[in-house]
Length: 405
Image 1 (tube, rainbow, N blue to C red):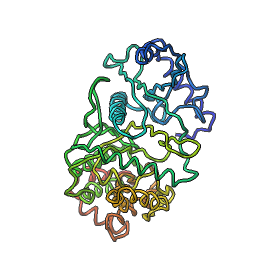
Image 2: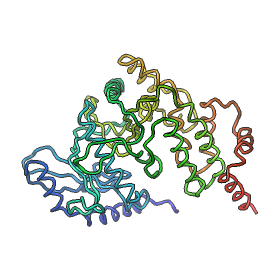
Image 3: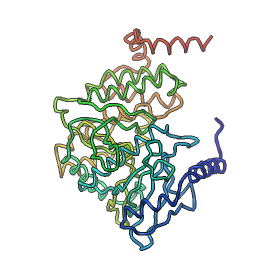
Image 4: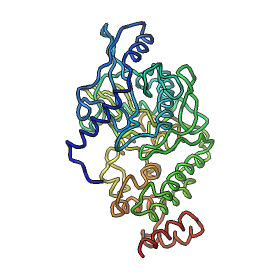
């Protein structure tokens, strides 16, 4: 696909959002919102821009604002971008993510974690959209702006440490994602809600960490074998994810009988902050998961040096160390999980790299952090022999040889 200039890209986004808005029944939205807010009249307000600052258009969702006539706090209507020209979500997955995020937000209402309150959701295919016409989630609009990574990070780490300590107070007995069938349902752990990189269909829930991580790696292997992922270097990618699948035991322990909620897409802009860098809220819980302790409190993207991460550097960043030290002051047991790079490397994998030259440093970093001393070329040859009975790998190798003739 030819690269788009900004004007062409913006035009495509505008056309997509225009189609989406055409399906929204504003009268039905206001009737529902008013009924859920003591009869207060309201209007649906669309951002003046569809891209850029103030647009409320995310990679996977579009948002409209609901303004109440008496000046009470506004709400947001979150609508999945199922028709996105670049990132469109399959409708069944979008529907599951709506139910999962609603369940997650309802669970968080009974904790001290600053997250938006959720009021309702609707799914047209199930006849629960109240005539709105699209999948949607109604939730509170929190104050603050997304953190841009700048300023007094010590305040951020202090706030995050307090949130991690709070989440540890609420263990679960299975891994997966929270979900409900209806807005009146009680959140329970169900299938895992996708992945921050690619559209994985819900899978699980799981009783053990090994089962959870094995299923995740297996979905990647299936997508690679099917030509949907890493089509420019499928053999190399398959070997990496087969290696990850076979090393899930390195991420587990005998104490993995408790699981905890994790944000997953925690790269920094999920944090809302005020002018003094106090965390006012955490948003975008769409793909949150209930995960093993070692993952829940491990190093994540919020403190990562992204350049070093993508270049295959396995050393802890300055921010990694600062966050770990701050957490140690509040819960030394939790901080102990932040010295291990394996979880972060496992889920970062090969990222979304389209060229092997950029994926190779990531592959080498994975091998290194999981204890392999061989370089890539030497390890690749031994891995091809080790996995020679893998039929999907065999087909990829044969396809590669066939393309060379």
